[in-house]
Image (tube, rainbow, N blue to C red; front, top):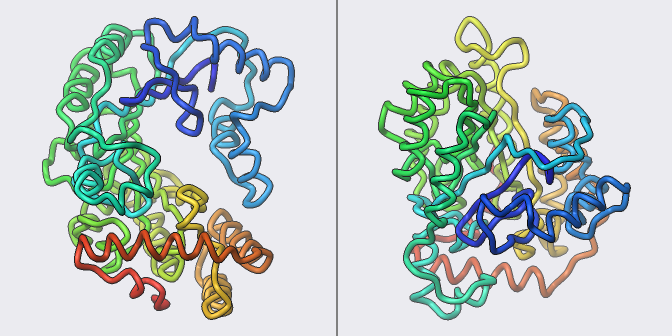
Length: 371
């Protein structure tokens, strides 16, 4: 990824979304000192401290962004910076306020945080303006380099709410149909434009779903589950490819069963004769929450831990594919082996109680098993 991929958001650039941003622009990226040092570490076979989070995830869960990238590039080794894949997060406009998110990626969360000093303590940023946008020079660079790019990924915020995203997609549609479009979305759109481009172009959707049904509106505040379910079903039937991406946190763990079942239903729906995805259907991929630390999926007090363990174990009785089964088995082991941290648990309770007060919700309802 340090040779082929660049992540762009309002705070700067980095080789991937897991690494600290550098204060530079796309036209200067290939000369960035941090990037050159990281590349040299990779070429020499030296593990980088910047990649520690991926190494830790691989050891504990057998999954990481690093492994995803290696599979994506079929294990190729690169020695020169030639960016052909841009992960573009142009502005933090979002119609959701997910509990695992932060002000940098949601203007709604930024507004809440700016109004509430207690909540602001949980984010590693000071007060922020209502919206955070990338330097316009970066947008211009992408538009100018579309002939040389293979893939552009749009996240946000919520990309279907962002005018700059639609502008670039229109340019790809009209002049550069060779570019693969990747959209990470909460699937809350009502404009049929997004379904139309999915039929016309090579579009891959990553749909973020951490919970299904009524509890989705607490985990990912702003969710209209009926609309989301309708849109995901339509995407599975029309788009070139779809992944359902789930963050497993303490807030989503007790809804894991229905979430797994929904994803399996969508996998079946995306296969012929309904969808275009081939025998495997859409993918259900996972990230087990470690950041923010106070939403960890494996840190449970003794009063809840046995129930959490029993519930996750019961998910093994469902119709699962191998990736889902591996995730559940790794979760069981991690919950069994975790040494409970009272301070982390108390921090999570304070954080969620603040959001309960602001949003008139009750996060403790999420600790009731959903079957």
